[in-house]
Image 1 (cartoon, rainbow, N blue to C red):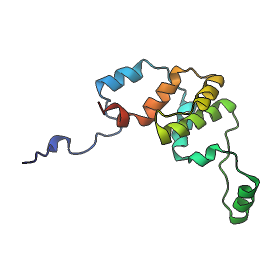
Image 2 (tube, rainbow, N blue to C red; image 1 turned 90 degrees about the vertical axis):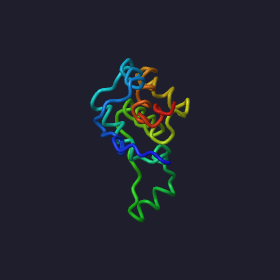
Image 3 (cartoon, helix red, strand yellow; image 1 turned 135 degrees about the vertical axis):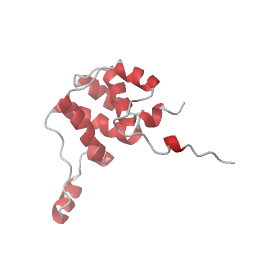
Image 4 (cartoon, rainbow, N blue to C red; image 1 turned 120 degrees about the horizontal axis):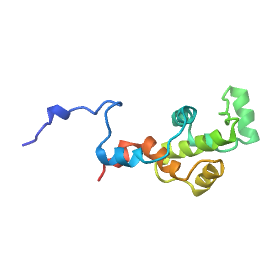
Length: 129
């Protein structure tokens, strides 16, 4: 016989509190500014191909058919954050080391990598224990 938990039938709303282990882990990590959080949120819509340099042919075909390429951010620090956030949105904790090195070289802390990935993946990875 199956049991249906009607009290918890639906997922918790976005503003709900995190489970204790996740909340404790994220609470001690360094954060980002509001601008940096907006870059992380915008990176969710960027495909992985936005990280590579478009070739001359792809720019020509894109110009011909009206398919523009995504622009890089003017600020190098924010571009390093965007690149790492795109990888985090698509791959979770499996980040390329060259992107982590570029992120740290741009002036971020190594601990902020974990903050970024924990906030992007959130409960999806943290609850599977």
